[in-house]
Length: 216
Image: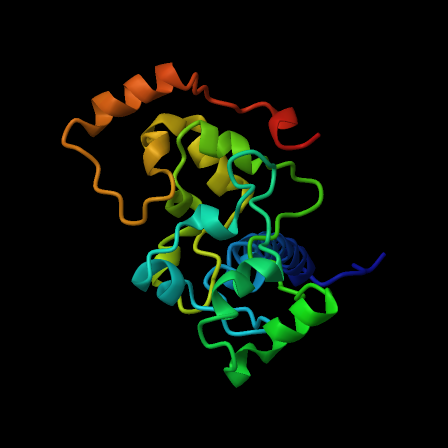
């Protein structure tokens, strides 16, 4: 009986299988790499808001504290978005007729809140409590970056699971006194490592690696 396949068929089959493995591995690597890009994480992307608001001006130049606008940052799972009335506390007197602030005035007159676009937006399957991080001495700029230098708010950190776990494995290195949580550009003392160990004991800071910590 004559041979059905050419002798080169075995080599061709082996080459095809090897190529399939390489392509599969490359495809998986591409997907994993894509998941770390700003296209997915939105890191450093400037998001258009209903009105131009500069943290650089309000925080960095004028010196308004984070807690003046984000009043719930110490006691709520979310720092909260300030109501229009908070804006009007100042802008009923300052730049009261500026055209750029007409959406703010219109919101105040109608009682309809401005529709701000959330920048730090975690998936619904992730549980995050803002207040507990503040209570443990994690500074605003640790997660939000130098918000006082941003003309438009961007997401400074990738907010990926790996990024969160990196801190949760060793949270002590990101601690500071609670009184300095909102301080931008905090200058740590020379005995920082010793101070952080003391704060960890005082604030009862522990490594939280259980899945249920974030996925409930």
